[in-house]
Image (cartoon, rainbow, N blue to C red; front, side):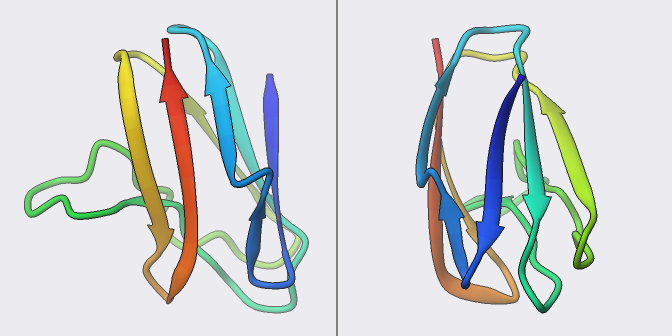
Length: 85
């Protein structure tokens, strides 16, 4: 499992590379809620955590190869990238 820590309004690390079947966990160590939501998706996003409260985590199993750029929809200046190979 790979962990992305949300801290100081940033995803750390900002880019994560995993294999199909791997689990990625986002852990919110920030003072406010955040999301990890695929950017630019008009329909249902390929990646959408919903709101991750302070101190909470969200896990995602990478099922499809590709590059997924994501943002926090509450703070769109926060950007991350998930690469599934």
